[in-house]
Length: 164
Ligand SMILES: [Zn+2]
Image (tube, rainbow, N blue to C red; front, side, top):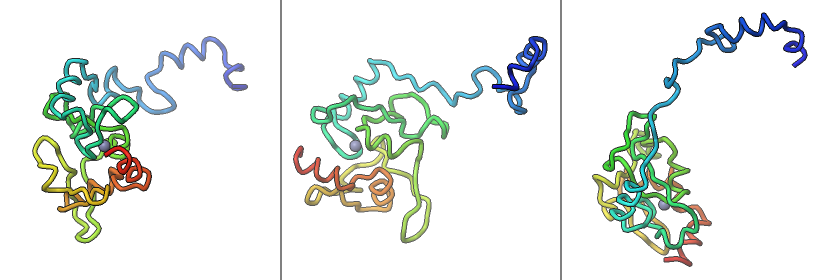
C-alpha cells in the first residue's frame, strides 16, 4: 500500500492502460471461463424427475437431504463437458463436492485410470451394492467412484442407517 500511495496519478493511469496484470498478459474477455454452468430451473426439474428426486450416485433421497440438490456436470465443463441434459446428474452436495471437476481416478490394485460411474450410461446395480448401509463397489468403476465420492465415510453410513 505504501508504494501505491507514492505513485503519481500518471503512473497509475499507465498501469491501468497496460495490457499486463502483475507481469502476466491480461486474459481476453470471457477467456477465463471454461463454459457457462447455468442450468435453468426447467432443466433442473427435468433432471430431478429423471432421477426420481434422489442423488444419482449415492441414492440419497432429496426429501431427507435438508439442503438444495446440486446439478452435477458428469463430464465437468473443465474437461469440455456441456450443459445438455445428458451430461447432468442429480447429486447430493457431498457427492458433488467430493467429485468436483474430476472425471475418474486410479484403481488401487492395477493403477489404471478409470472413469467414474456415469448415471447416463451405467446401471447402478452393476457397479454397486448396498450392504449394511455401506455402498460396496462391484467393478473398477465402482471402486474409483466409491473412493473419490466418499460414499462410505462414517458420517454418511450413519446417515444412511437412519434415513434409508
Ligand atoms: Zn450422493
